[in-house]
Image 1: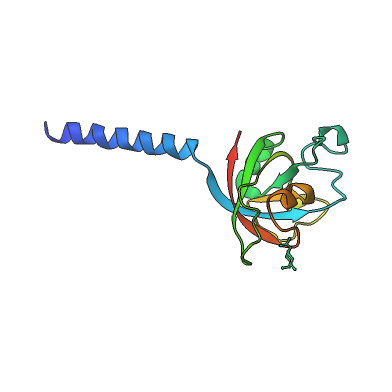
Image 2: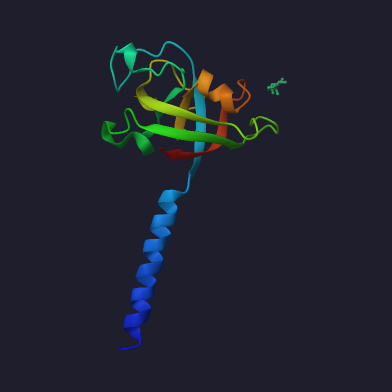
Length: 141
Ligand SMILES: *[C@@H]1O[C@H](CO)[C@@H](O)[C@H](O)[C@H]1NC(C)=O
């Protein structure tokens, strides 16, 4: 028993570290793209003032929707790979604001069921605009 206690707390510490590291690192997912019309959105209805001037925005898939809490969150997104070699623009990162829910967006994503859907401007900042989806690394900021 006395030997069991230290090892149990070590495991707990390891688990805490793992959770902490996991949170500080980017997650992996997929991203499709979508173009206009963007209104109305599931987040802000017809309020066009919620779109960032950069036109770097997007919609979240069900995994990130968080019952609507995703609205207004900012994500940094990086393209890591795609079906066609050379699709990703190496070293590019884009920061997007979440304005919609992919499942109900007016303009349909180039692929259903992805983690994120990027506005075409955001998508083409990190990848070849003609790709229908890319593998991404993303992190909430
Ligand atoms: C983008 O992809 C298309 C289709 O695969 C290709 O024809 C085009 O050359 C690519 N553009 C760039 C800039 O790589």
